[in-house]
Image (tube, rainbow, N blue to C red; front, side):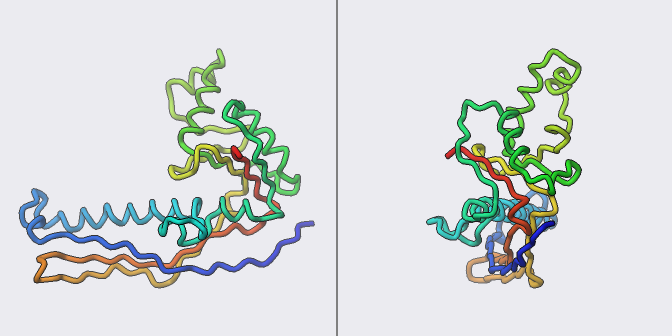
Length: 220
């Protein structure tokens, strides 16, 4: 009984550039391995930046990096078919917020094995502490261990760049990222500046497949 509107991803070009001086490479304690180590760190930074963009992107933002694409949050807020609520307050118990979100999800998408509750790391820890207040074996576990955390069988997934005042409930496979076929790492050695100039380029876009399977609650 699901009506699914066709969606299209339109990846846009993104660029990250960094320089490594020859002097640094010659004097660094890692010697020849320094170049590879630095490139690995920038590759990790590139991945982290993509996560920031796909969740928080907003083409109307005054920040160029954030304005690259519209992320899941911005799309959901502008989507009349997504289920949204901006009446959450900082004093609300997270279990009550999560319960209201679950109640807002249409029954046709209520498969606990497929759903995820996306929160920030701080919100995830806040919920973990609330569970730890219970004088039970579960409460003890939440205080001393780092277990997977669930709400009514739905996994709580923390995303480092997710806002503390937003909460997203959706099937995991509903979140889609488009990566262009051309992703390059180009190197140019500028002999006058004595520097290696690296340019990482790629193409990205993000969207969800089904609006009706998106529940977004946030502090308005």
